[in-house]
Image (tube, rainbow, N blue to C red):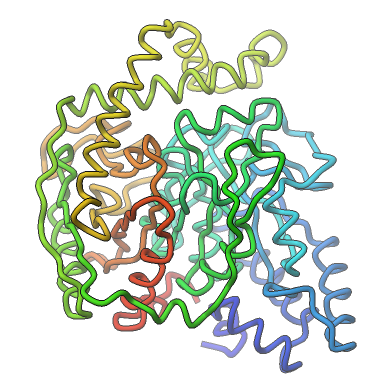
Length: 478
């Protein structure tokens, strides 16, 4: 492996040090980054738009600052990818839909503004399913995003392009959004670290015409990185109050690398093998249990807990999709009149179903949601952290919406493999970190959930795990 190959897998923190010590030019870094994107991206289709000229120009400006001993901030000169659901000024933003294939926003989303202000350089947009509607990544405009570990397999979604780009060493940092697991799902399948903070930590303005839609279900912005430290770096830049967001929390997040080292003593961890709702693939179950044993070796006190809900899995799934479909209908019904030919059949069906939901069915979701919240809060009355598998299965073929069986038993490919959406009903902070690899060498993620506002508990635990049991040494491509 060449020195250039090694550079592509350095963390943003490591690159930042090299840039500021003038051992690495931001121009050189961007040249190597774009060279790698042009080499690897045709194989995996992580980027749907590459902003090559603008990125090179920004890299030159960043280098001029360094030569003057100036710096924009924590992410000065770092190549960064933005999901194609997130508006970027002057860069095509399609939302994965042919209806927006020529749309170029006139403004940046607030999170993009903050990343740029900290010195990050946007290299392009990453692929997503149309309007981020599902847990795999493909659309009629750009096609399928493939898993860097095996291009026959899915990268997951809806932030699949971001996860694949990070996993393949195309960029160290990528932004993502998560309305049902869309950061954690591809993080698990691609073997990277996916982090969504408490709802409201990062301003949400992806739909400025309907700012209130982001809480039904909770849609979080977050990070996809190879290391926990990079997630903390990126999160600290993106988080903080914003008067444009009616739900944004008032606290700023100050980056302090020493805080990552402060793993709470005798951390009490609740471990649920299946949330009382799912069937889990045998290998995934084994690797997650091994991950819990590793946490115990770090001094955590782990106990297996049994979760039981007064509602069936089918009822909880229906509650989530009642919110999801109605949100899609409100946001995109206007496209049916003039752009129905540009919409996929699935999106048309979702919008149609959303328009048929009556007010009583919609309001009933509040009771189910309240019950789920109370059950999860009951865990946090006794424990500092909840651990589950992120997904019920390891990576599967990308021509499927989801596996149709688990452990040889029939499964619903749309709902039975993602242990993530529960925490978009509640808004808790959550992350997926690599727990290990299957016998076929495929990554499996472990989900960490904390009480609201306790992001540092997740980051500190993940960091301690990463330092003791590193996952970045294993790479999908050279």
